[in-house]
Length: 335
Image 1: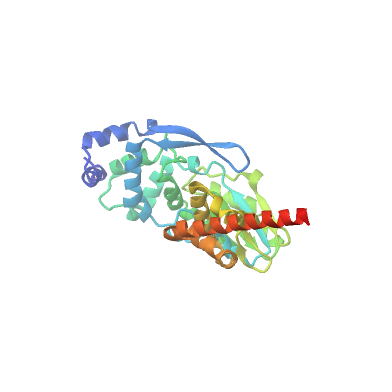
Image 2: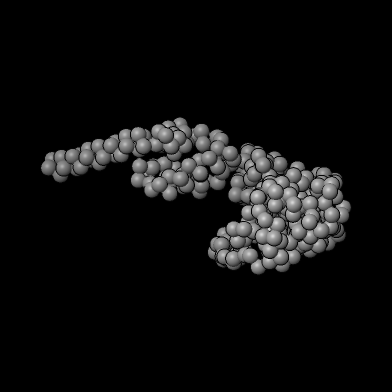
């Protein structure tokens, strides 16, 4: 019995034979689903069966979450997010976004093996190649990472550590800012000339990696953004006064929901609370403005314990306004 198998059996109180059966058929324990893409198309994802997902989450907590990640990687990292991706670029007038094609499926079990051989010190010291074999079978589907497995996001970050290191050094040499959010890489500069030839240079770096070996750019998605037009990074806007802000359409959506807060369903109220929490993390100034404009509404959304009383008050006020409008209309009609 391997060290990893023994640890899982003890920690999860599961029979070894049961674990071995899951490991043996792991690639077949997925259900295919489709999720909508921003362009209106769909993307296939593979959702692991509950018993496989249980083991993957254990591996995520116990092994994967402890693997080192480069500081330039901002997705799937605790206490980091879209604001950390955008902030390094806020003072630069020109931004290039490069997209990695088929990011998760391009990372393979072979890449994990190479990573393990080169960086064995980040894994448990007592692991052997048999432990790694079990690990790769559980985190890969048909030898590749997949969208849907809970281990894929953090594991992709760990496996891209040398890529991020090489690109950050290259960016520093060219006096560029660099950050990566999953499959999106962002470079920026004060001059468009500094970004010339960047796509080709990054493509060469990708082909020279020992791991992950199969990454390629989706050149159709390369975008050059500049000051004076809208510069968006992970959904956030770089303003001309060198700040990062939530997009205008998001603020309008939240404002409209606050106007109608006493008519929202429970699901819509939950969505509003989530949007306000997101705004607090990425654009505190915008949230502060909304709280000043809609003090009771934002409080109702953010404080569930006070929600019922505030909503009742707002509904009574709305009813009173409607009655007053009807009275004024009748008087105007008879005048």
